Length: 248
Ligand code: BJW
Image (cartoon, rainbow, N blue to C red; front, top):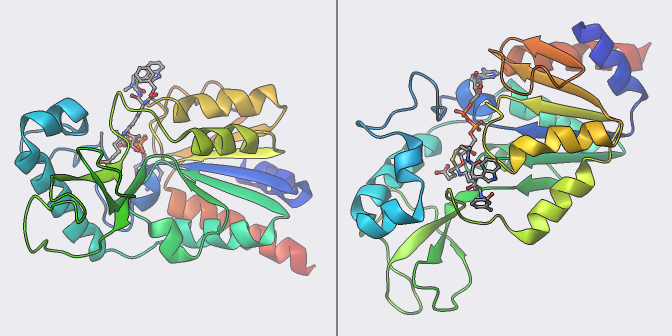
């Protein structure tokens, strides 16, 4: 399958859904989780992004998040975010489902966005005192670990860790978005569930499914078109072709 085949499908589509992962933000300078740059000190994401890790050593886990927040704050959306943002506004019904917590899709102006794993810029009470999650864009934090403004207990990042449930509303919105004509899975290793199951759901709904990734993943053998290469280049190429055809 070629890029042009996908563009032809997109041109005829009104309902388009795009699932994104860390690879979409790689060109912005945000490290992926499982790539060569995925380690922080000697830890893998699987060792830090869990409630048990936080319960055992909240200061260590907060150091990791504080480091990532500082890094992300100096990054900007790239061409992949820009194309996705443009499509989110131009297709009749476009849904963007992201596993990324960096908010770069929001900063690019994406509408109809579902942040399946939360946001690194939002905090919640670790004790669960009833304080609603709050936004905190400070970096560095005046005090680490940060505290809950309501009860003074430990705060946590309002993200979804391994073993935790995603928001029921987000999962429902994601499954609903699988009823589409074209489903793109972009820059994700397609191993973390439930997000990794969405491409199967889209197939069940008869969607034309497309993967864009630097390398093959478990989704590659499932999709109708597996395009290998950088998302920021392939999406920009698709957008150029789509826009050109729209002008003809
Ligand atoms: C490029 C590129 C470029 C690079 N262009 N491409 C069913 C089966 C088996 C297990 C489970 C299951 N259901 C649930 C589970 C357990 C678990 C799970 O999936 N485990 C697997 C590892 C096996 N899932 C959960 O626990 C989830 N909760 C849940 O389901 O609750 C109910 C339940 C609980 C327990 C048991 C059963 C049910 C929650 C998952 C939460 C994941 N959280 C994290 C951290 C978020 C906070 C934070 O950021 O700190 O989310 S982990 C991490 O992985 C992060 C990411 O969003 C997520 C996915 O990673 P992603 O985005 O795919 O990144 P990478 O690095 O893996 O891949 C990057 C890709 O980009 C690569 O392929 C590159 O090639 C590519 N690339 N540059 C194009 N320029």
